[in-house]
Each structure stands twice: as C-alpha cells, then as structure tokens.
Image (tube, rainbow, N blue to C red; front, side, top):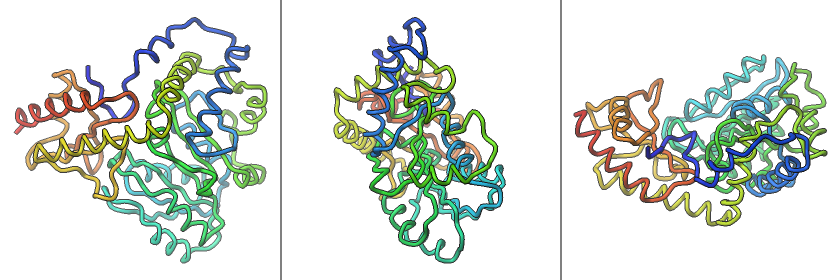
Length: 358
C-alpha cells in the first residue's frame, strides 16, 4: 500500500523495526537516554531553548494542554483560523469557558498578519491568540513568524500554536518569533506512529500557568516539568512510540534538518507540478502551499470520496475531507518518509480513479 494520508504517515523500515523491541523500565537508564535525546532534537526542530515535553496522547492532547494550563473561564481569547483544525482550536477553548472571538479566513488562503493586528487593536484584554501553523484541512502553511510579530506589536496576549502537521516539515523558530505555547505530535513529519503529544512553552506561559486555576490532572504541565528533570514522563510512556521516535531521530539527524526541510519543499512542489500536468488544481493559493500535504480539487461532477475509495482498491491511500469540503477534494500527504516515486505512483492511480468516477 502506498500510504499517502496526511497523517498518520508511512513509517520507514528502520522505524517499524524499532517498534518490535521488548518492553523496558520506563524510568530506567535506556528510557531516560531516549527521552533526553529526543528533547534535544525537538528543541532544534521547534527552535527553542525551553524544555520540550512528551505525553502519551494524540496531538490534540498537547493542544488541549496549552489551553487548560494558561486559560481560565471568562478569559477573552482570539481564535484565528482558515480551516477546520483552526476552528476546532477555538471550540476547545470555548469548552473550558473562554470568551472566544473568531477571525476566519477563507479555505485555501493564508492568515494575513495585518488583519490579525487590526483585529487585536479593536479588542481589549485579550489573554491569548490561538493559531494553527499548518492547516491540514486545506493544505495551507501560514506565515507564523510574520503573524506572531504582528501580534507582539499590538498585544501582550499569549500566542498558542497548533503545529501538529508542521513540525519537522518546515522550519519553526519558537523563541525568535515569541511563541508562548506550541504543540505537535509524533505521527506526521516527525516520522513516528500515533501516540505521542509533544509541546513546549515559554516563561510567559509558565507565569500564566501559575495564575490559571482551570481543572487539569493528566494534562497538568507541572508533573511533566518535574519528571523531565529526571529524564522521564509522569505516566507510563508509550514505549513502542518512544522506540519509533528514537529510530526516526536517527534518520532525521543523518539527513540534517536543513535537508529535511528542503526535501519536504521539493516533494511538495513536485506534487503540485504533477497535479498541474493532469489538468487539475490545488486548493491552496500560490503563496499558501504546505510542504506537508496538498489538497487537490476534484473536477466538476467528480466526487472525491468515490475517487478515494477507488484509489484504496488500487493500493493507494489518500486523505478525504468532511464538512464543507467533503467530496470536493482529496488530500495527498507528502511528509515524513516519502519520495518522488511514491508521489508518481499516487498521481498515476489518481488519474485512473478520476477517469473511473466521471
């Protein structure tokens, strides 16, 4: 199966082999060595000198932790979105009692920094701004550094970021950009299986943590900080995922981060070129293309869900959509362990599947 979902992603054989290891003491020396090695690598990937924490959860576990540790009921929050996942971030904040105001951009378009700045100038006492770095609903990479700078120039609000489908596929400079909380996950460009949420937070976020009384237990940052000092995590780690991420780290370090990012950009451009050659269009606008996945618009009268089902029968798995984009697009993942040959095969099958469903 040519596994081209936008997450979870296909696993390299080296990573798959690592997951077959026997269990170990999750607080023993080998586990501590892996945790500390991964923390150091993820600090480079996230662009931070702050500690990086790992929790057994989905990526949304890490995102939820950003909220429950910094936002209290009644706090005013600006949620900025351009797709489903950005919108969900705001919905989660509402669930914890935040007064959420939304600024939404059209599907396929980037979040515009100056529009965010103007919105903040029209508001008062904003405790946090919620952002999504890479919107995998639409295949759009937002200019996070530019947006964060505009926020910093107009507000002292915390900047909290869902980077689940961005980390490892594109450069991030958390400290330089003034990001206060950033959450990602194991199963996308970090080249592991699902099961690990990963997050980092600024000193400003820790100050908010000390003031915030939102109920939290499993997602409470305090125990994660305490245990990381010992090279462990508070609860039993998902050891097979830890093994896999450690093996993926071998691959990332051998390739070099700059080369990893360049490869993602190259294969993304190759994918879009293949789409154009087939006479199809992508959803993302020219300044908005994601290095992690591409959303391909279906021709008039062709249902993307049926195309996806046909492709699956032909041993190529791609992502579909839901909500307002259901049936209108398919999403091709090209993050993690992927080559141009994988894309070539997927695009050939896509062409056949569209022809069968006209």
